[in-house]
Amino acid sequence: MFKINENYLKLPGSYLFSTIGKKVAAYTAAHPEKNIIRLGIGDVTQPLAPAIIDAMHKAVDEMGVKETFHGYAPDLGYEFLRAAIAKNDYADRGCDISADEIFVSDGAKCDSGNIQEIFSLDNRIAVCDPVYPVYVDTNVMAGRTGNYNPQTEQFENVIYMPCVAENNFAPELPKETPDIIYLCFPNNPTGSTITKAQLQEWVDFANKVGAVIIYDAAYEAYISEEDVPHTIYECEGARTCAIELKSFSKNAGFTGTRLGYTVVPKDLKCKDVSLHSLWARRHGTKYNGAPYIIQRAGEAVYSDEGKVQLKAQVAYYMNNAKVIYEGLKSAGYTVSGGVNAPYIWLKTPDKMTSWEFFDYLLEKANVVGTPGSGFGPHGEGYFRLTAFGTYENTVAAVERMKAL
Ligand code: MLT
Image (tube, rainbow, N blue to C red; front, side, top):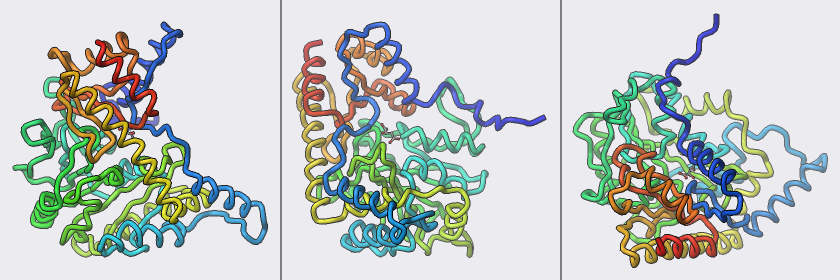
């Protein structure tokens, strides 16, 4: 008789964004006349930039010609894309990351869920609270955590690092010693950031205690302030303790197109085994590859035209962030984030719980956001709005919220 992976049974409810999707679908079915504005999941709304579309068209044509047809992509991804990433995202920032330390994938969500596979089950993870749910959920599925405690709303055997108003939504170094530390800056969901000096402290800590940092830099393109690092490899010593995850979803609109990459430096070792070799082994076996057409589209992100077009797209979303931040602030909400990130984190009014505010906003304003408690217990009493909507919808949502 087969047996299931019982670790899955430890997970309460469905994935956060599936729960929201079901609630909104039920509300829409009951009120088909309502015009719902979705500022919940961080999904982009602007079309792919012309430079990307041109590159895709060209690659599609190549696929129809014998001489330029491409079958399976190379394990690590095409050299042309990895070289463009190494130059633009690392060398141009003074960071020492080579093209063969970059693993192209079908998105940072998959990589952030899968990377834990190369670590033993007796590693202890440390996560921010609130946190992007994929990090904890996938460790639960793997069996690296204990049971869920409904009282604390936390899993046993996980180090939760509270990110609250008192610490500007940035975690403090944990008192217990973790083996694997998940960090995400600019942060999802709070939109907070840390300075390069603060990130250096984490790198020093990880090197000192022998931990690895899994650094999610998916929102790096939204950084507007000078002292906020774009990559963990700006910090000295990061090559021996950090893996970095990057996405093309948020900076270039690839949420549906799917493309991302993970950096595993060759200096990152456990005793004398390099994590690079383990991830390469896994990539070779379990990864289907981002198609040639999509990797060519990714290359166009780094073209001169692509850079100009995507800068404008990021500016568009950041203007939305400003509209939300300033509009809600002027209406008396307590808001943060939105300066270096496309997420605005607000305190729920009138002591409503996050889910009460979700229902209230959906019913009274027909606006969808994400309840903070869905990201962890310290997210209770908070609510996330995304700047990835259209400008018109963003303005309308803020007006509706101001009128409540
Ligand atoms: C979010 O809304 O937190 C993200 O869009 C989810 C994701 O990127 O997977």
